[in-house]
Image (cartoon, rainbow, N blue to C red; front, side, top):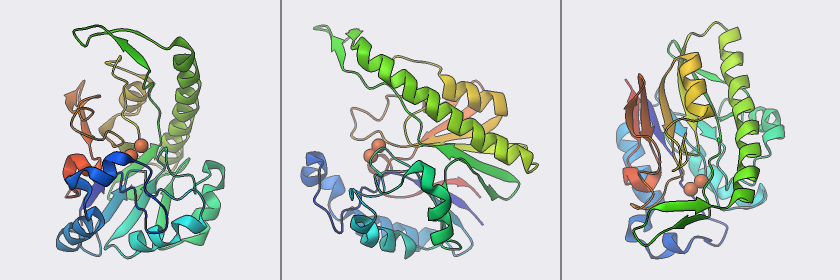
Length: 248
Ligand SMILES: [Fe+2]
Ligand SMILES: [Fe+2]
């Protein structure tokens, strides 16, 4: 029984691609096929596969049906986290999604699920992504203050949702946690954030996140061990579509 994770499939079986990089980058060519092949090699029926958000380009549920069918057809128990592009998934309607896909998919939002004696907790998260103003040497010398203020509100909301997830797990008796975010836990301006603080407060052993695409963005946030917690990036293009084994 193993736990695997990967994020940012950005499926588009029914919709037009919106990211130009995904159209031209050879890394994205046939990525659905490459990911499926890896999953079929690695993921056993009793394994867990956590998909860390940005599942589909579809804007409505009906535009995502084929993408969800693809996910349903992958091996193992599938757990989905919300990404910034997952318009089909209204956070407030997560219970309805879980009822609709009961026994097939689990939507992780304001709840948790178990893996051995661990609780898998998580939320989309949020980080301020600029615009930044850089000098000739590429060093950030300023940023858009209004956007930063907006970002702070979204960060607060996501932190509250993450706390609900931790608390639900704790109420159920869990003491060991693996924490999942779609956005990186820190912005490029930060070394710590409310998300790293929550991970430390609850004693999460690992923080697993996605969202960072392209080599220029892979190191926007924490990777490796910081203050006793292991931070791992699982965006699909970073992993070259091979799901990362989080735990045996
Ligand atoms: Fe993404
Ligand atoms: Fe994203």
